[in-house]
Length: 196
Picture 1 (cartoon, rainbow, N blue to C red):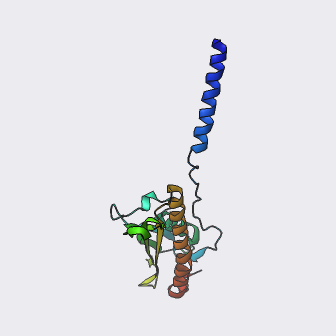
Picture 2: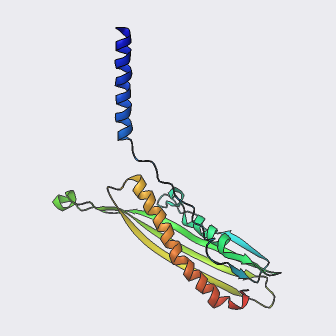
Picture 3: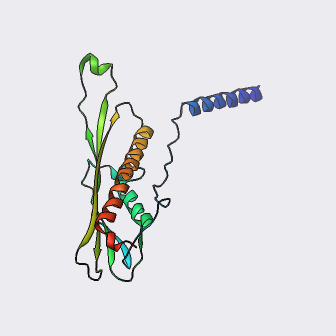
């Protein structure tokens, strides 16, 4: 009798475990690091490349540290992967002035329309501002390139954390797709004599 009750108890716990695991939330998505090693190097006539990070997050409205890959990290990766020193003197300073993403809570519609509509709950505004300055290069007093990129994205009120994180990753990826040709063209335009 005791053995039969024990078997029933084990079976009941097994069914409960299966039911609970079926209700569990989907696993968190895994995001790749955004790298640019598949793209050609831009070799500059300087002895070294230096990354200077002037960006500081501006407070509670900013969500860069919650993103799977922040724009700041993506910009650092771009500089490491795409820029190369090929000279004997001088330095190319890759200066990150802004890599901000702010979150704004949106006002929702009330009434029947609001009750039966999935509304956009938040807007994310991203701002990248980067300079590439060459210093200490013989016979060059002032040489720099720059690129500024902005993007905005909204998200629905019913978005899960996984959907939100995917949107954040996509936002960073889109920013870098805009940024790369802008900075590459600026370097070719303004620093053409210093590309090797």
